[in-house]
Structure formats: C-alpha cells, structure tokens
Length: 566
Image (cartoon, rainbow, N blue to C red; front, side):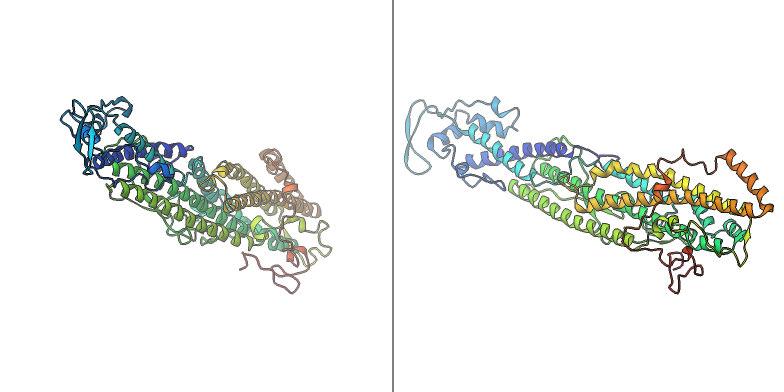
C-alpha cells in the first residue's frame, strides 16, 4: 500500500497468494474444530466440501469413528484421544508432532453393545484414525483455497505508480496548454493563472486576443496579413483549446483504468482478509490489512470525464472536470462488512463476494470502453486544422500574383515579433514532448485483470500517441511559421528601404539571442513533422481563404468555419 491510497505492488498475485495462505490456515483450524466435535458427538453432518469440486472417493469415510472401539478410545477413562485433545487445546504445533497410542481403556478384548445396538469387540488398543481425518481436513481447506484463488481478479504486475505518474504528467502538460479544472473537479494541484503561463500568453498574442498581439497585427495589414490571420493564425487558439481538452481527458481516463485495478486488488484482498478474520479473529495476517471494500462511481456518470471540454472564458485553454488520481470523484467511500462465524457461511460468502467483484469489474470495463470511445468520437469530429494547426504546406509557395494591390501596412518590427512568438511557441511545444513521451512507461499497465491489454486500452494508448503527433506537428508548424513570417518581413524590407534598417537591427539581436536557431533544440525534422497530416481522406483546406481568392473567414461562396469562428 502506498500512502494508504492504493496498492502499488507489481507482484500482487504473490500478495493474494500469501493472504490465501492465511485464509487456508484459519479455515483448516476452524474446520478441524468442527469435524472433531461432530465426530466426538457421533454426528455425521459435517461438510467435506463447500465450493471445491470433489471426486467420489473423497466422500468415503476414512475411519469408523462410530464403532464401539473408537468411542471407547475417544471417551474412555484412560484420557481420551491425543488428537481430540490437541484440537481442543488450540492446535499448538504441527499435526505431525502429535501421536496417539489408541488406548481404549480395556485391558483385554471385551464384547460390548456398540452405538448401533449390535455387539462389538473392543480391544485394548486400536489404530486411531483421527490423525488421518484431521490431515484430510487440511486437504479440504486447500481445495477451497484453490477454488477461490482461481476466481480472483489478479491484476498482478500492473504498476499503478506508473499510471499515476502518467496522470500527473498529463496534468502538467495540460497546465502549459491552458487546461483549467472545471467546477466539481478534484484537487489536482495549483493552477497558475493562464495569464502567467508563458506558452498560453504567446498563443493568445498570436491569435490577436491580447493587447500586444493586436498591436502586432495593426502593424501588418493587407491581403497577405489577412490570409495569414485567416489561415495559420486562426488555428492557434482552437488547436490549443482542443489539445488541452484531450490531455485533461487522458488524465481522467488513466485514472479510470487505475480505479478498476485498485477496485480489483483492494476488494479481493479485503474479502480474503475478512474471511480469515471471520474464521479466526486472532489469526495473524502476513499481508497489510486493507480498511474495507471500495466503491467506484459508474465511469459513464462520473463524467464528462472525457470527450467534453469548454473554453475557460478567455481565448486559449479548455475547462475539464478533472477526477483526480483515484480521488473521491471516482473512488467513493470505503465500506466494511460484519463478520460471520460459521465455516460454511464464511466460505460461501467469500465465493459470493469474489463472483460479484468479477461482475463489477466487467461492468466497469464496459464503462471504461464507453468513456474512451467518447473521447475518440469527439477527437475525430474535429478538423486537423483545429487539432494541430493549419498546414503551411497548403500555402502557394509562389505567393499571390495580385498581392497587396489594394495597399498594405508592413512594419517589419511588428511582423518579426509575430515570427519570434512563433519560434517561442514551437520551442515551448517541443519542450513538452519528452514529458508526454514519458507516459509510455505506463503502457504495459493499461491492461485487464489477467494482464492483457483490452481493445479499449489499445485505443487509449493510440489516442495518447495521436496527441503526441498533434503536439509534435504543432511544434513543427510554429517553427516553420516563424521561418515564413521572417521571410515575409525580409521581403518587405527589400521592397521598402525605410524598413531595411529595422530588419537588419532585429536580425542582429536575434542572432545574439539564438532566436530562430531551433535546429539543435528539437529532436525531430520540422519539415517532415509539419507535412500534411489529414487522415480522413478529405481536404479540410479546400476553399479555405488562406489558399487565395476569398475574403478572410470564407471560401469561394462556401463558409469555412473553424472553432475560433464558431
């Protein structure tokens, strides 16, 4: 157990096996008591099995304890049976350490009326069969142990700590992308105001949503600026909104998988320990006691946990109800069960609870599948344009033959501020990629009770991979946008003598500050990563104004709506 919150073992089957050993010891102890008293009372209605399977020979009597000789041995004045005394004395030491002389109290063979009403011969000594009976009880208890063990949801090697780290890393990345905890969220740490998050502020400036960014765009007007603003720069805020929504949903979904694992591990262990303590309250346990069985909110109603996010009131960022890692929004109260005492009742209850636990896990897996599907449905309903920025390869490399004939304003210092912001955004995105890649460590633990990844687990990992691709593409496109804006400023400087001095001065400052010198700072090829990424078989850029010929915000008579426009 880690901090009392969750079971963090990566060898949980061994823990369950150890707990089952404790259960078997307690069951053997109580079963021997029950059988001994039944035999002593010459009663035959003791159980030889409860849930385990049994072959016919297992039910055959091993010793005729109802015979006159056996009765005299157990109840005679000579002191009785050593095995009966051992059981009644608390079963100290091992069964193998007990020996019984089989005395009946008779000094010679005598004929007596036996319990059946027939004459029987009682010798001075008999071969006491009580030891064999008690040894057989241990086999019965082992059979019940095995029957339960093979029904247990093992969740053996799952590293819940790795899943928690992935969850926390998603939140960390999300915060840099403008993620906000919506009302009703669990405590997932402090959120710095979005105005103080550097990447968020940069993207807001590029979107023209803050005063500084508005000043930049005021310094660059005309058809080229309008197309840039309607194309690439119209996609920067929607892209970050959707990426932050996806990463917040991923954090929730990883917590959902962890909740299923924790439910299976904790509750199986609790019911084994409950059964052990019910049978023998003073029985020492070799595993840490868990406080009770845990309730898990139905994943389908605990959310909004995926596929749903809203703006945060500003231009950039998404607001998501964050459930936290195994927080109270997901894991409900811990409950306990009153002890039972009868051997059969305890074993039956244990089996019933494990069967019910398996059913609940099956239901939770279905819920989990539904919420992962909800995120993917939402994600695939969004244009690539609003997931990983406008594809700069869609621009006409020759430019517009009609360029700027209606007039324009081009202050290269403002244009280059836009370019510098693009470089900063691209490099900031690149810095987030290793954190996102680190969540791969949890992949092997996204699996069902048998350790096999379900189709849903595979789709969740694929969704995480898609987000990484979106962010890498966004980084690359920001860097290439910086290059293109820089080239535009250079072209204006060449055309207008009064702009050239400003351009040269800023380029010298950039060289000193390594602005735009990103080749050594990213571990991927921006040209390759920025290539066309539309995967759905249609062209989302068809008739887009940035490809020429239309007013900003509309295609050739057909509206092209982005998240920012809607």
